[in-house]
Image (cartoon, rainbow, N blue to C red; front, side, top):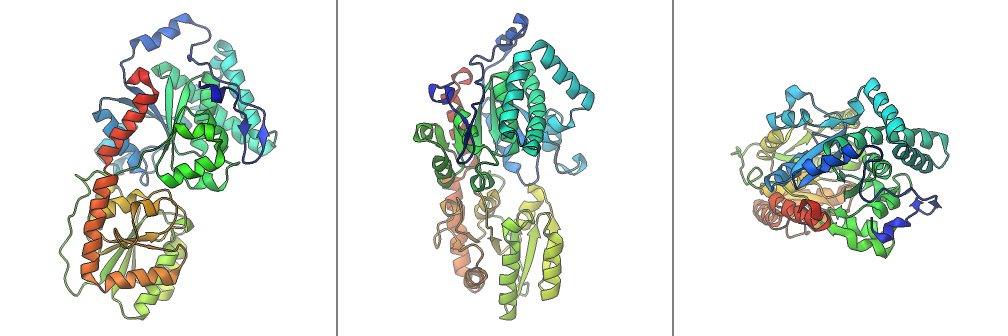
Amino acid sequence: METTLQNANLQTGGASIAPLPEPDSDFAPIVKDREAKVEDRLPGRKLAYLLSRFPAVSHTFFLNEIRELRKLGFTVEVASINEPDLPRASMPKAEVEETEKTLYIKSTGFAQALWIVGKTILLRPMVFARGFLAALRLGFWDPAATLKALFYFAEALILGEWMRSKGHRHLHIHFCGPVATVGMLASVAWGFSYSLTVHGPDEFYDVEKFYLRSKVERAKFILCISDFCRSQLMRVVAPEHWDKMHVVRLGVDPTIFFPSREEKQCADPMELLCVGRLVASKGQLILLRACDLLLSEGYPLRVRLVGAGADMEHLKAFALQKNIPVVFEGAKNHVETRRLLGRADVFVLASFAEGVPVALMEAMAMEIPCVSTSIAGIPELIRDGIDGLIVSASSVEALASALRRLLGDPSLRRSFGIAGSKRVLERYDLRQNVCSLAQVFRDHLPEIA
């Protein structure tokens, strides 16, 4: 590990507690020499990914990124904390194939998990001790937090055993929440390095809860999906860690998401599409309130919400009360979502909290004019008045005003659609950005170059 990490303390937002033990620098197995021979049999460019849920309806960029890395010659093996959020019968073939070769940590049987814990205690007592002590320090002797940390530690032992059996020496983790806690504990216990792709925004709001400072300081390198994301990490850690942060943007595949629109009849209402989980932070209620204003002014429109979540019943009740024509599509895979995008006149995302939404990129790539909010990394994607319209988050009046401009001006919709598609091709092309990602991996992990 780097010198700057060797003395890093485990810290929460403003408090510092005892340091986590440092991992062994060479990830050498502790007991059996024969186990050290695993690495000698490995091909180059081999990566391990840890994800919170894979495949996932709302996180198709995981699969896209992994598949593009494989096209570049990387062997990417995946561990996922949770099972997929769709039954296999509803998945595309490519996703089904991924499930068959993914480790699902929470689905490890009790007997198998107990076997891994016992084997680790007997054969690798220092691995167990390092991880156990690190989990206790995360809990900071708070009973509830300590119990949760010990569950994470159990998952970390399963992950570490999988890493060892596969011969992996480095772990890459998407998201900085509980999934990264498991990855960090596994790194401490088993002695391999890890890196992070940080999305936000939840971990930026509660630095202590997510152990954000410790995760960033201990990581070998960090990938940030936006300049805003990097700024939030710089806010949390000392400048000595800034140079290991790289902005590598997400992207969409322009061979899948390209301009392709269904012909509409002149009498059809204007269709507003929103794709995202039905939760408060996505702002769908603000969208419906703005539509209520527009309908009262005589604008013919229909709203189509793609996604599922806790707010669905509340949104349905509001739409019924206000007589707003809303179609609740439920969760859709990317093939179904693309079909719905082809019917939309305007794409709207009125979020309160985001990273940089891939759903916006997909809509822009298809030349659909977009309206979203001035939060997090969204203004890096949409330049207000150039690639689309940006409004203040939470403002019903501002959103209604932006939609009023677009609904009444076909040429403006067309102009924003063309500009938005160009913007995505220039800065959010999946293949180009995964090439940048691959170069970061090569630079920091010379053993896979």
